[in-house]
Length: 314
Length: 313
Image 1 (cartoon, each protein chain N blue to C red):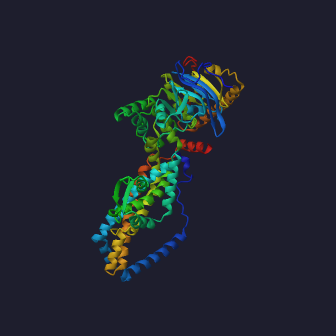
Image 2 (cartoon, rainbow over the protein chains, first blue to last red; image 1 turned 90 degrees about the vertical axis):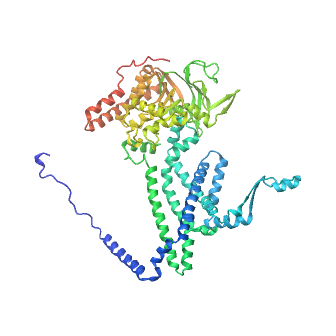
Image 3 (cartoon, each protein chain N blue to C red; image 1 turned 180 degrees about the horizontal axis):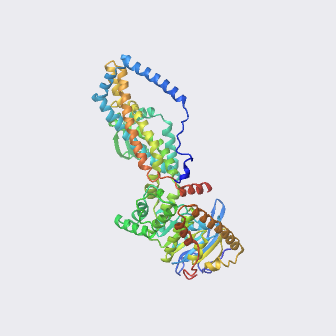
């Protein structure tokens, strides 16, 4: 610096804007938290030590792994795979596929999950204890034609499957697919049309363009809501009792509480497990968002701004 | 009324017997009832560089996109290297080709877009090897070796692991050119490759394109860069209102245009170019590193040696 700068303004050392309301809010919250803690500590019915014990009981842990976590993973895998397929069908040029996808979404979004699980677990086994796979109206046609065979090719005893976790996974997965389809559709539509054109111009066929170029970019938009759906699914596994599947976290810990006449610790044990599982999922979601956001994080350069302007002009 | 470029063909619906790489006859195209192309005829020969110019909305970009079937055409025929694009002629009846066959037809035609359209989730190297790996089944080693070679060629040998968003517009467009070249195209289509660029970045892209033209690549270029057209084009085709108004070697078509609409367009372009040059000077002098930067836009514009290639056609 030159010597004439002695009276020029230097570094800024200013008082911040006062925020008195923050202090008020802090005091109010502190009082509420103190009240909560006092009730936790003074009310014996909470019985936290027993809740921790329930959390570690074998049937509860088994319910957590085999019911809640396995059910969530299974239902989400089915839901995402089927959902992406339905989203692609929904965006297809084929009107039949579009129609099927629309009806699917319409139907499964309208049915409450609890009702769907009862329907699959109890209703289906009442209607079709054994599935016959063959020609439609095969028995009637065979009767009219006087055939020996009843035109059935395969049989499947549904009774062996009903009230297993698999029915729960199928029910939750079918329902989830309807929501995932909408999420995936929004993600696919969010990818710039120029991306598909660039891939086409390079000679890539449509299927490969979707798999290699469009879907990976759509993931950036699909992942955050899918994380929400997964966390919601963890909680919805508590509906598995509707199938009925009893190897499931909430049912097991609630029952444990009831058997020991300690209802509250049973509920608290399940609550704490749900909190732990969902916290872990949130960490995983943050990692996935970073992974699929790669290549998008850089500061918008002037070119990027110019592109935005061109887009706006078109 | 459109002019035919190489005279009337006796049998306009079949592939030409001569050497034209692109042979378009009476191409028509309408968007929602509005006719955008009203019967365009054009032949582009191997090694030729053709610049399409004309006012915006004249149909030049649409015509370019019709060549590689990014748009379907309503009438006429387009042949590339003797192949009827998008259809198969079975005994006089046209059958639309399935998507996979159309994809195969596009393999040999490279294209660069106004907005680059690099794959943002892939690095520069991954962008370039994507199509050779996925479409041609080239081995990774071979594809990467070729990609590094192409990156050197477009002056980006140090950027293979960058993501597109970390590059300037000019660098992105050069990667896009390398990506198209990785498929060994016999024809390159450029759709206003420099219109989305800051003035001082235009030169580096035009330089790559000029080198490509010198190397004998057949190119069809939609651009407003009249300097590039004067210097590099073998032929300039002026399109307005969906028809070819005028065409010829650049020094005839650009310096001595016959059609009043061509003249009106060119004088408008000259004014814009002057404004553009001022903008370049303004940007450049506005920067601290003025001296180095001045050289670059210079080499993009001035047609110092007009005899770059002999005018053909």
